[in-house]
Length: 212
Image (cartoon, rainbow, N blue to C red):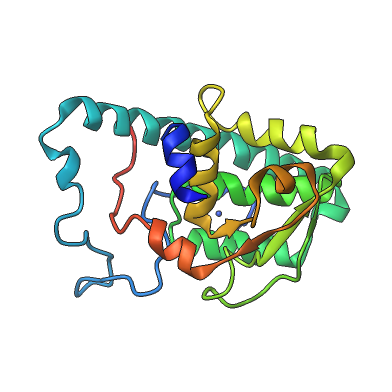
């Protein structure tokens, strides 16, 4: 499935926390003496001498940085106006996201999953407190089949332009939340489930600088 997709292309206050657009989670991150994560040896080598790729990466970081800001505002509005939305597990997940300085794309996906669950667009599998068997508490979810198109459009709207399928799939693979069959999962026929091995294989072990 991964090969086929490649061929077809390639938040303490939980409501309004802002943070550096930083690194992704990993199972065994490397830290310096001050406890800061450090870049893995050789990371970024493939773009170091390619200015066009560096510019594209900077534009992508800036987009997700701004999208995360908008998602925080939308999330805060729901927190302020919808008592049902004020779930303890939602707050705990955002706290973890803040503490670990998760990259903006992952923060956006987390927040859109929470909002979509509250809106009835999906059903969540049991949450977990373990970071080794979940994406920020999410062990999986299943799209509501009668709201499938709405959920997919909500995911697509996170991107700067209509994304190719593999772009969306890669974003989810980086979280570890993947289905057995993508078309069936988008229709709500099968769930997205957390797979640590998938997240591990798609983890970017770099600390991303804040987009200005």
